[in-house]
Image (cartoon, rainbow, N blue to C red):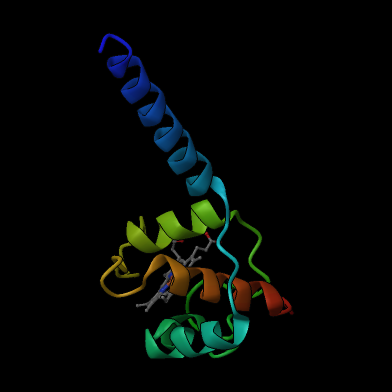
Length: 107
Ligand code: HEC
């Protein structure tokens, strides 16, 4: 009986640690799918079809962590770029776009 709270605490700790570790790992993305999401979500209309030929900052060959990239999508500090919540771009889709952008060369 008296051991139960300890067990629960340990289990909670384990779950929290896994969540924490999971949150830091970049999900592996599929760049071919990413290219599709990039166009479907109109990223290309501002950043250009090749990520560096639009009106907005070039993002081809993106050099930022996945975490930062995801934060940019969710809450942009740009007045022009709209935020993309989970309902529009899931974390997996974001990972695909991230993989796609990294596969592009910045010219
Ligand atoms: C309406 C135009 C517009 C659309 C649509 C748009 N962006 Fe942006 N984006 C911008 C502008 C302008 C900036 C630069 C301002 C800033 O970084 O705060 C920017 C910045 C960024 C940055 C940060 C670049 C850096 O070096 O800091 C990333 C990454 C990015 N956009 C990705 C995307 C992705 C992915 C999509 C599609 C899901 C997208 N954007 C859609 C206009 C747009």
